[in-house]
Image (tube, rainbow, N blue to C red; front, side):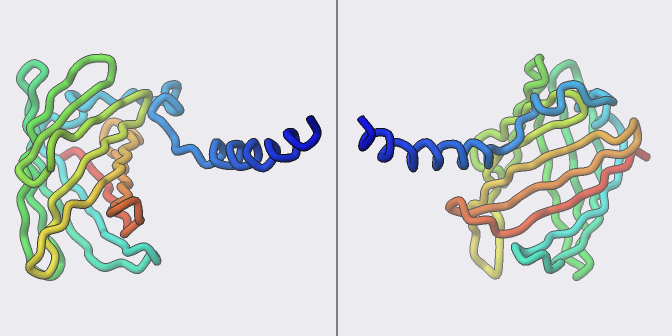
Length: 178
């Protein structure tokens, strides 16, 4: 019996350590205000300022995004026009669906499959795979994207980008309604 207990202790300790590393969930923010409703916040014109950092924290790119958002019932369109400091421009058009209960889905031409989002309180977590062109090649990278509504005008966004579970960098954005 003692031998089994000694063998079980390392397994239990490892399980406890991994549980302590569990990622946050939208439910962790359920009591936070103001309440985030994408149909309300992403309605009209917005601007966002952002940057991309590599895994060491070095800023690699800075950009501004002009956004036009509109909803008809539970169907939304979010047009994003990116302007990078190196002069490059990029456009992404999201087609969003509100499913109720804080659940959203989205598709865009450079998103692989469907983006899944869950909102609670002032937070929204999106998870999706993006086709990302880099130096003439295209890579499918995963995004764990968190948005936090600060007030009715400002929302902060932090997204971790990874490939094969390896963290490549982060995208940080500050949205402001016009």
